[in-house]
Length: 132
Image (cartoon, rainbow, N blue to C red; front, side, top):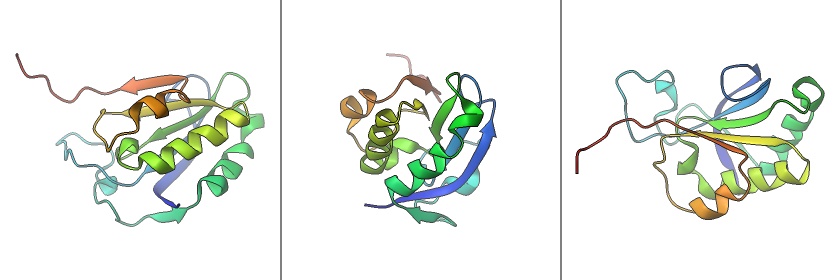
């Protein structure tokens, strides 16, 4: 299976601990007025299709730069909108001892428990709160 990637930042310092390889996945349904990445909203958009193995090979090339204190962050858009792709990428990263982060609003299509087995850190961006 392929995933849709909007862009990649190879030496990010704001999306988790250390130096990060940041993958901005395509697609988000929230449409926040203050969004930093509105180009990622459309589920197809101007994106690149890529296999999980291809993406992780790209990440691995930067492992010397991010070392043991950094790693890969899956952001977006909303990474949980591509759960099968995200899960496979996370599994492959863990096989290669790469620190994993997801930056999410928690709005996706499932596989949450399985995904969390392969995530070292969750950056949860709560967009709104309703009183009960």
